[in-house]
Length: 325
Image 1 (cartoon, one colour):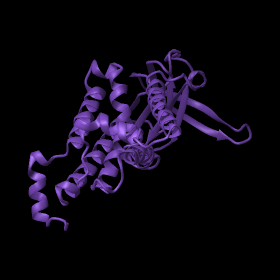
Image 2: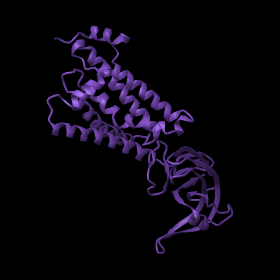
Image 3: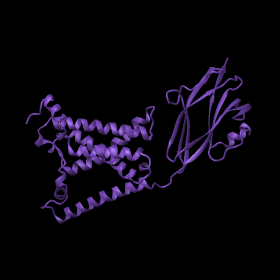
C-alpha cells in the first residue's frame, strides 16, 4: 500500500490514541530515570542504577532501530532486541566522544541531557515514520501477547532439542549479562584513586589563559576538581603569587618572593566534578607566576614558605604571568 501524504501523517501523529505503546513506556521510563538521578533521596537509592542501566544499554539502540525500521516485517523481535543492545553500546560512547570535544565535557548533566535529546529525537522520527504507513504494517509491541510471543520466538513448535537448549543458553546469557552489569555499576570495585585538578581559559578550553594584563583588573579562569578518591573529600585550594625565574642549570625554579592571594575550601562528593569560575585581581607588578595549589586533608600553615607549600600540595598548577601598569 502507498504511504500516506504528509498531511494525513501529521494528523495521525496528532491523535494521542495513535501514540505507540512501546514509545510511551520508554518515555515514562526515561522520565523516571531522570527523577532517580536528580531528585534528592531517590538519587541515593539502588533504584537509580536499576532505571539507568536500560537507558544506557538498551533504549538508545531501541529507539534508533524503531526509527530505521517502522514496519513490522522489516526485522523480527529477536533481531530488534539484539540490535537494540548492540547499537546502544555504539551510540552511548559516540555521544561521550562528541561531548569530550565540546566545552561541556564528559560530565553527568551533559551526558543525561544528550541521551534524553537523542532518545526524544528518535522517538519523534519513529512516530512520524510509523504514522506514514498503514496501521496494519506498523511495528507494534503486542504487550498482551508478550509471553506467548516470546515463547514462539525462543521455542518454535518445530524446534529440535538442540535448538531449545541453545535458546535456554541464550536466555541464561542475557539474564547473567544484565545481572552482572547492574552489580558492577552498583558495586564498583575500587580502582586507582586520584584527583583531577585543572584550570581552563575563558571558553572552558585549555587555552586563552590570562597571562598578560593590567594591574588591578579582574581576571578569571575556570577551576576544575574531579574527585575519584572513592570517598567525599574536602579540598583546600590556595593561589600563590611568586616572583620566580627558571634556573636551566638546576632544572628548577628559583623563588625570590611569594604572597598568598587566596585560600578556600571545596567539598567534592565521590565521583563528582567541581567546575567554577575563579576570579582574581593582582595589584602588584612584582610577581610573574600564579601558582594554584590543591591540598587534600593535609594543609600547611598559611605562613609556611612557598617551597614547603608546593611540596605539601596534592596537586600543583601554575601560570606564567606579566602584570603591567
